[in-house]
Length: 370
Image (cartoon, rainbow, N blue to C red):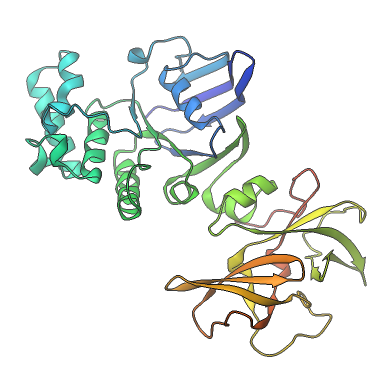
């Protein structure tokens, strides 16, 4: 399978810059996910690769071939959009084969590809139906199949699951991931949903305002975000953030904010100025409710005592919203011995699992091994 390279690609619409210095290599057979919020430039990058938008500056290569100025039909890519865009008057078979028929592919070859795609996507019993006779998940399979029959060099997915309900999205994530790994076709997948990104991608590119924030495997982005934006974007539920400063005490470092003190890991902390504003991050799943009575005053995480504001019972786990002085925190815990609204509880903060960010948003703690 071919690789894809973006070499310092820029895209501007008049005076508005939507993609800034996008420089990235996608390996043969890789499933790369572009994730970011609205306006991050992720769909524009996909359209630049497909040839639907012109590059302002930079170079795009597919299989080492410069395709920057080539029209879409000469790039050998297939794109699956958020909208299924199926022809309502055509059967599934006709929708799947239309592109091949327009290219004058021999009938026997068309039938071979349609039957192969129908078997791979479970569409064989549906080939004679029209789109109105299909469910949302079946229509999305047909849209995927229409791309697959072309046997392209690269698959492009532009938020293909946004129109599906939660159950179908989870099912289709599994199907897309397993299908891509079976076909080993180089794939670039765009989504705003970090759950899709974490579950599908071999690597993830986190984007904000047209710039790459971080590139890495899902577990790397989760454990070692390079800045506050990535830390807040990756992970469900979102990371807790506290504003404060760092103090040195008895040879160690302590994060302080109004009404709380949290010990920091001395083996990971870089030298920081005590006068600088800092942001401490802790994931809800790393907060634990202390059940054995109050901790000693000098214990790590001691002083995080607060009042329960809300208990969200979600089945296997629950989200506990706690008021600690002027701060609001969320803890994601198991359903054993849940507190009640209004209870006073204590939270334990493992120093090895906290994150610290400078005023500019950059991570200040040294990288954990992944």
